[in-house]
Image 1: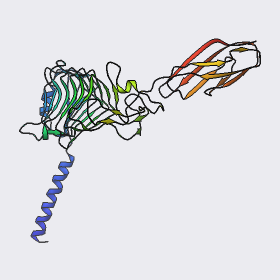
Image 2 (image 1 turned 180 degrees about the horizontal axis):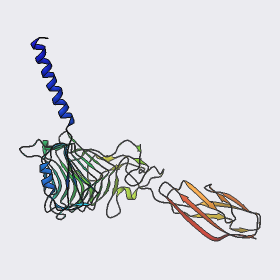
Image 3 (image 1 turned 180 degrees about the vertical axis):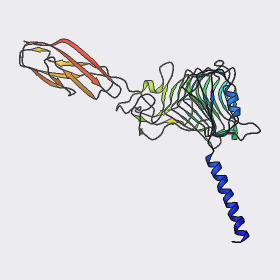
Length: 365
């Protein structure tokens, strides 16, 4: 074998060995016990590591300059972060923060999540904030500053008592995804300036739900799809729009076919040219009610029963008091013997059921 071939084989063997070593290396899991510092654990972490925080109370102002890092509470909402100013400042990409209860210094100050960069980092892109409770901040999540962040996923969080739930500014061509969140009791649910975003399946109940003075380059609904939405309906689509006064769009509009969407689209009041074409309407448990005619007479007595239940039941169960039943909506029943009969109706829809009973309602002589 020539020397050249031997050298090539040796180099190839070294490369294979290096690849095997690299492939065998695995990301580390770092545990933070109550009383320890989350910041210290984050500072000691390498890209790809997971920091698991045990139940306890921890300080905020946590700075993350390591990419591909996951920081998660071991039990949802049992790790509580009490922030004196900001809670998390994130300067690198692909960071995941999950399952924390994060309490701010007061509604008029502090930022829970700030996505930006420092001189030594590339910026916070494609980060995920998921399943956290966020309260008492000036801003729940602050995304933007030109090319320093974008493509964040803000998912399934409870954001409350903030001046602004989520603030997005100048995201260029990066898309922000906001989905599955409950944003309530804030002055502004979303404040959007030059922000491209996908906003679906959120529950908004704020003084102003979307404030976009220059318009929002956002999509506010997906294509209708089967799946339980955030207010319990049977389909995914748009968002639930409420206000503390009880006069929000989803609180005042109707859903005549009971598909979980309003009968008309919602043109957002504080965001010119923005439309949710599938605004959510919560299903309500029916209130059972019925009438009958006649309610008295000689045997055999034929009685027409009529369902008067509200909120669109789809199933009915009647008990006529003589040991017989019906599942028809408006049944006709014949009483063959004299007596007084107690009638009950149970009405059901996808949300639940309700019953009404009237004692001695039918009198047969």
